[in-house]
Image (cartoon, rainbow, N blue to C red):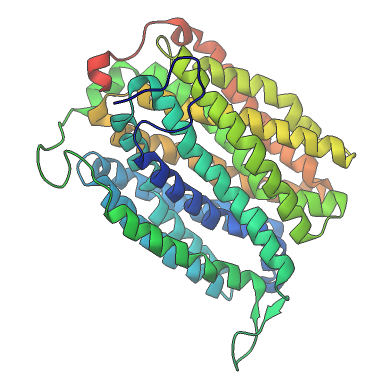
Length: 432
């Protein structure tokens, strides 16, 4: 397998299938964040409170996601992973359509829950594939490209979706019947690329699965018992990063509308542009740094600690600044720094876990971090805005929800400092 020359920045992965998995991640997050883009319109049409809106964006999705992830882990370690992902794509595509057809809170909650059910298999299967197919010294790079797909998915939902909202009338005449709200049209349009993706995934090979040599099995409990401390530290840090990322993503557009008076389409395009530029830069930087520094200790641990310490003042600026230019600059820097932390967490998890256990370890890990990030963060911000700070104090609510996560992540990494500088958790034979 040909590798890039040392010292050169090579974005092309060693295994081309990374691009397709990144595309799947893009569409998954685009579908996930359409609700954040059109949140004000959904709130008005369905008469929801901020708390109910946060429940729809976060808890409804993540409750199903977390439960399904527990079943997804063993499947990832045993089944043909691209076909498993394709099945999930079909489920979440239909779920997006259901969200666009919802007429009340209950139906919208069910649609978001089905979305979580379909997307639960994606990241465990994709990360296991990347870790198995990429050379060890380029796993960080492969994971960074996969995570960048999620960033571009958010940017697509905000930027392209915001542009479509600007072009479409509030009510779209689709036929002789009653016109359809523009936000419903966005959900319906998202189904088409998902169908194309599912077909492409069915053509992606997975050596050792679906025929040929069966995957090697390994007991999970003894491994976790030996390395519980390392996984606990990384899990708390991962929850901290994910909560700040997802609460910011869920409420940034609404914050720009309420605090700085931007229109909904303009706020979506501004935030989408920031995410599309700042996050991939941070993620690629995180992957490169991890590939160079993860030979010993807790892979990525120091990078996550640096990301949390560096972005804490930026999060405070985003929540409290009254100057729009300052707030947007801090928001871009915040997203860049959190991109480093996200990649370091996910790629580090693959590096410290044996190949035969990656699905069963990654699935509950991702479920845990997503449960906190999506399920706790967005509704907590909405509750604080409803009951404590008021609609005008959304920035303060966002900061108040993020501070405990920062504290927990930083403290966990400092208390687990021996893992950051100790011997590696697994041998090269275990990893590969």
